[in-house]
Amino acid sequence: MTATAPLESASPPLLLSPHDRPLPLHTVAELRALENEAEAALPAHTLMARAGAAAARFLADRATHDGSSAENRPIWIVAGPGNNGGDALVAAAELHRAGIAVEVCMPVEVKPDDARWALGVARAAGVTISAVPPASFDAYGWLVDGMFGIGLARPLEGVFAEVAARLSERSRNSGRVLALDVPSGLDSDTGNAVGPGAVVTATETITFIGAKPGLYTASGRDLAGAVTVAPIGIAVDMNTAARGPIRLNAPALFAPCFPARSHATHKGTFGSLAVVGGDTGMCGAPILAARAALHAGAGKVHVAFIGAGGPAYDPPHPELMLHAADDLPLDAMDALAIGCGMGGTPLAAGTLRRALRVGVPKLIDADALNLIACDPALAAEVAARGIAGDICVLTPHPLEAARLLGCDAATIQKDRLAAARTLAARLSSVIVLKGAGTVIAAPDGRVAINPTGSAALATGGTGDVLGGIIGALLAQRLPRYEAALAGVYLHGLAAETLTERGHGPAGLTAGELAPVVRALLNRLIYPPRA
Image (cartoon, rainbow, N blue to C red; front, side):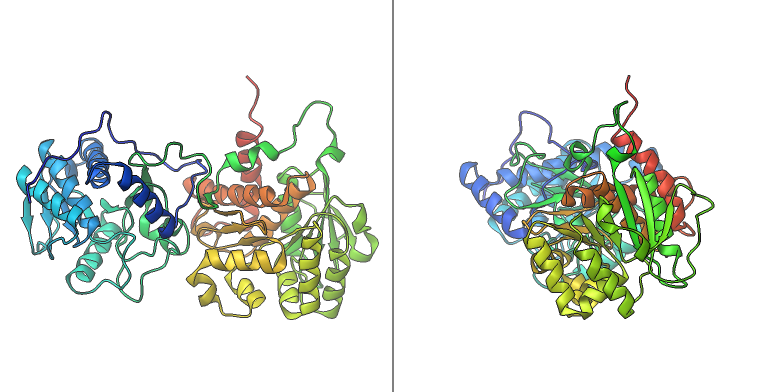
């Protein structure tokens, strides 16, 4: 084999931040189709050369601008036996030519033709290549995981599992661990580990061709760190529709659906929402939801308590109108948010059945979801309403989703996208499957993964707040799917904003979210006119 220099591009590799971009998220099957189509039209080794050059540019930018002593230390790269290792070898060659110190560890020599070409390129460039990892990484700046990409079908083992554990330790302690394409050991479709083996925890991931669903949901967000996309010349416009329906949630997907707030509008313009729930002793949940709905822009917000002992008014927010459920005409509302603190009594089931028959948009959460899971007739009614065009928005967490599908939460988490799609189809509803990388699925096949949110949301009442936000957006006549997208995005971004201010992740309370949602709504959707 004769080694040749990497193919030069006319311009530097394009690197994209996914922040606030509704990027398509490609499954492995879609990526393989894109790769095959591109390779048939390009000279040999082009995609690997471009991927390696993009990784090298990423590292060179950070090695010279990170403002620490790490910029003077060599970059250490581990190369696996497949094409991910080939990408790593090309990156090493590019860095070496640029005068940046780099060393490669290749425990098993690469095997595919493209990767063999890359090995020749690296050797010809004079890159130092060894077979054994160093005893310590203290002498190195950035560490690069180029072991395995999206093609991995079995758990990491042997030296690769050992290196994965060491890279993860470095990532947790001092950072500067870059994964090429995906962290080794991560299933890029589901965000779970490939089998029971080790998975690399990276602080940054540069992913090639397009972003992957598994980088944003389940364990993927924690394992991938900050994601950068390198299209390597395949995707012409990363903001246009992909071959697959999965998208990364971003304001562009929902902002155009918000109503204008002109001078001539009034409270009726922005709808009346009823939050239905609050059995005896559980009034706090619907009040949290209702307060959030006020801050999310609903014109009027009512709370309908199904139990006894509800408060006459809410002192912090006397704007809320509180009622016994039997005293509030639900058919006079523009939207309903049902389930917060509702309980599981026959009274709750009857109230839910009555609410389902009201012909306005409905958000169904919490106890109402469990009632549907336990009563096939209620589930059939939800599905029938959706088929008739009265689509509900359901917001289950994994355990609630498991009850609705008759499985366990581990099964839901094994493939969150599949679970959300199945629920959306079975119940003819928009599904918001909560958790790390919340999945929003519509019965027409549209799916998005939400990139906002943090561990600060792991506290009681945050789900009620989300229900109130989405309910308020439904009352403002946003379409169901877009209302779900907007609510989830703003809810998660509020948690991130509060964490940046020092109010999380530990100790954040659900009630703190609503005022921040209001500020974000006005910044993103209704900015002051110049």
